[in-house]
Length: 53
Image 1 (tube, rainbow, N blue to C red):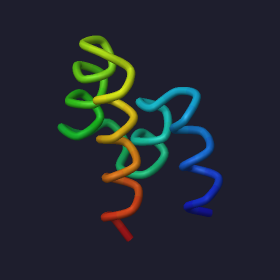
Image 2 (image 1 turned 45 degrees about the vertical axis):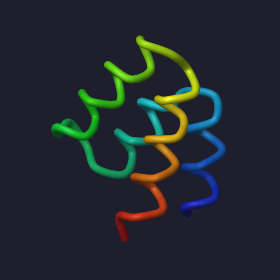
Image 3 (image 1 turned 90 degrees about the vertical axis):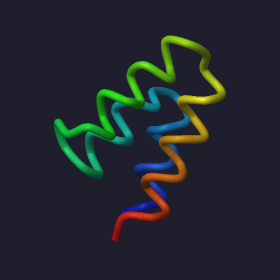
């Protein structure tokens, strides 16, 4: 399932984080990072998906 979340995160990083942790602080942080730039949001999303099990 993590592979699917990572693929989703490549296209929409906040959606990948949302599927992993829901509406929490990490989700809103990822929204902010994605608005500041796609790459920081993508890196954060992949980190959250890989870290959270």
